[in-house]
Length: 160
Image (cartoon, rainbow, N blue to C red; front, side, top):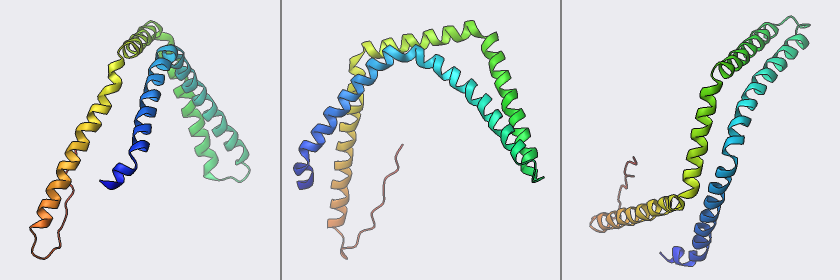
């Protein structure tokens, strides 16, 4: 308890900082939810194509040694390019559904941004579990105080 008292300002600063970061996150999520959704789609497509290219380049550079890694690299390149093509086809065929899902993400981001009390839920959860932890420690100390030998086997309660 003395250690908690001595570090009270650090704990308070950490709580204030986490609140500030949470509010910043909510605001940034409201501003950048739609661009990030489109950027994510683009990054996945580019990553599949580039992984295929690098696997193909590796297979060409290691084909001189005649190892089986050259053949495996060609299979990896082909697989990556097939997945990139399938991903592109899925995006092209489901563009309307994709736009609807991004609109849902934007709506959810606006809801979270407008609902500031969402930030308080983790603090309340933290407070409840600090209370549970203190009650558990109190129970362990009580059990330890009734032992004849002074040796206590402490078991950690399961978390859910």
